[in-house]
Length: 256
Ligand code: NAD
Image (cartoon, rainbow, N blue to C red):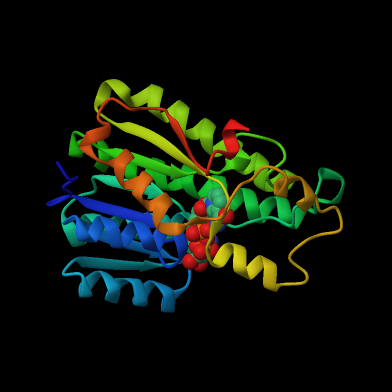
């Protein structure tokens, strides 16, 4: 049977673009109430409108999810707007400058770790009581090929995504007896704003860039919706015995 998210609330971070947007539209089409959590207000409103056009219901929470006040407000948006929270998708993320550690500035380290790792930590901790109350709560984290290997990004991004996989596994083990499931997807390269913005910005890559590595075995660029399909599967009852797993969605890159 097709996954059914009727009467379930799904909170997606970074839902204004790319993988998060594609996931928001899929969950909405499957009946979920969707919370669009996004830094960029215009992107958030556009996706909320797209959800409504599909016949779905969206609530919007705009702000930087590495700020604990924004995190608290975002969880409250789900609980106040929909009466609870069943699914959390920690998906918002930023790329680094592909720099090796000798060229990683304090500012880059803090920016990447704050958004890619601290924000999921804060969101998970804040959402936890509501996910446990739901009885069959689910978290799906958007990790990366860079969480599986050392050659897919610079040091800061690689560390952040390895950390996110650690958060996935630890939380999965600690709460499995309470009905919570926590999994991650590990996308290879995906055609999203993250990639196009980096390619268009001549300053996006730092002096210590290691971009040559990733091209070697990475395969074709994926589509955002191909990653969203895997996220929806892991969040669905069809994945009821999958917990603490990291699912590569990468055209086979992780198998090379
Ligand atoms: P994207 O840039 O298209 O979308 C990310 C969204 O997150 C943007 O709308 C952005 O405004 C939002 N965002 C960024 N920082 C935020 C913050 N602090 N608070 C709230 N929202 C914030 O990128 P995408 O490719 O869809 O990326 C989604 C996830 O997938 C990221 O975690 C990224 O690391 C991961 N990923 C992407 C690729 C790829 O090649 N595109 C590969 C592997 C993993």
